[in-house]
Image (cartoon, rainbow, N blue to C red; front, side, top):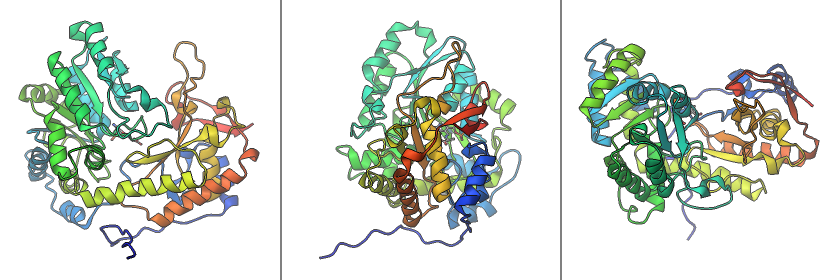
Length: 458
Ligand code: F0G
């Protein structure tokens, strides 16, 4: 019997036109953009994989909720509905809404982090690290060693190494480490998940040393999906049951709702402690807004409450992770080297092996991003030397082990046909990879240079 082919558990109600300009036009556009994909206008991009953040499609139920949003300054009905949803899903009674994820970090860290503190975690995301270092504290990476080898196929490469974490708890004075930050899934590690076992063990270790534990929960639902399909004992549990168990082990979370909240803007802090909620409230009012809106419109909170319920459904998550797998498998079939296993929100192409003739000092992943755009109108993002910035002391370029082109897939936006175009585009570039030329800076900002840098071909 022939097996039934797979199809997405949704149909399309609204469409947005995208235009494909010519290869010559793209060659011109990217030159004008200083060979930096951030400088392109989105209308000149055919398939936009710059990020999966805030770029997803909302459902009919979310759009309906938008109309019902309560725009009251204080005591908004939409706030209380969101609070109830988050308490039901995550078991966290205290909610602080924020305008996005980094704003949640800013509020929570203002309450918790002092100069010279140490915050252990599993490869903190850029903004998390930024908010820690801005307070002259240290973001200590305790991820398992296997996470740094793109070839090793392991189910949970986002895990924390318990020995490294315990060593940190012993090495630093007790008052310097107040909490551990666990990113689920680990974005900087390629969207790799953390196992329930690891969450539980990290939680036990934190309790033993009297430390708090927080999730960076941006992609918590994708993490729960991986637990369901990869971890012994979770196959028969629903995603919502798994999510509830994950959050039972932590004190709270920061969240960028632009990912697994399935909305275009928003974030929040969710907490178990009333005392910590009070401390955060001071900074919330100062930085974000009143406690029941925190930089969001009532309608944003209304759409988020619906989005959180949708993103924690198995069928939705399966359709999403399957797309990542589909793209990854097709690239591997074409002989293109990628980070393995494929994570929850993006496929990462190994640019060093794709463009062996281009030295790291000439930014192979940036070159690959530029060439893929010219070839197919597809925009990815460099995660390599350009992003790594210069060493703050020596001012030398930092050369990370991996030079990657991240292809992040927006939620519920593209079909498999779009993915086929991405594969085709990379194959075309692969055929002419020996003719690709490196890049050099013509403008470079002192920090976070990747956003505004300009280049020319060498
Ligand atoms: N934490 C993680 C794990 C993230 O991936 C991001 C954003 C943030 C926090 C910050 O959230 O953007 O709402 O302020 N990641 C985006 C990306 C930008 O492209 O990976 P934000």
